Length: 91
Image (tube, rainbow, N blue to C red):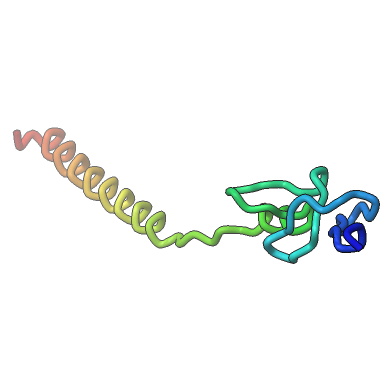
């Protein structure tokens, strides 16, 4: 009766269970179980988790681009005014 209560690996039925995937709840052997961030995963769930894209906001990047563009525009305009004044002989 004890032998029938032993959990088996979902992939390798001849091997005893070692861990349980925390995403899909499959029982895994030592070869199939992978620990990532302290949590056991099967290969399929780990692959899905690793390829999941983290969507980051692009607003800070665009604000930086706009601020840099305005700064360059301001400096360029001041440079052109001072260059024109020097060429015209006002200073």
